Image 1 (cartoon, one colour):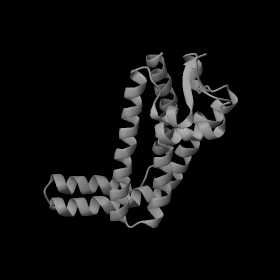
Image 2: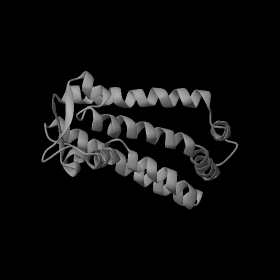
Image 3: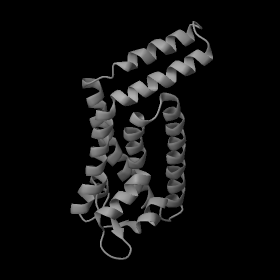
Image 4: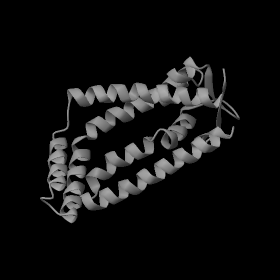
Length: 184
């Protein structure tokens, strides 16, 4: 079941990524060229490493600020895929439906609150919310370091959940939401 669960997750995330890549191609971020130019300056050794990092942090902040609409769309797609669809399909995402799996509440009925708790951890919804909010209230430097720390925490949570799932246990997101993934 663990391998099917992984494949189901890859399909669910893959569908979202395909939609977001399409949007990015249709609506490119104008600051991406600034980042390319900066990288080229650094590679040609026209600027020092300190200058590169300084400018990189500012450009990264500008990219995230101008991409808030993009992050809101990504967050919306995640909410629909991992919260709304399973709420109305007996705990099944598109991927879980294909692999005959479903999310089940251990004690009681699966609710939207349970699905949101799962998604904040395993699908990065908490991380995306932080980006959308913090980019407007923090300076570029504080934002960069804060988001870097939150990214590391997000990655560690996913790795720990993956290891727990591989050992036939529930992931952190399952434990905190009181859910499990079962064969349908």
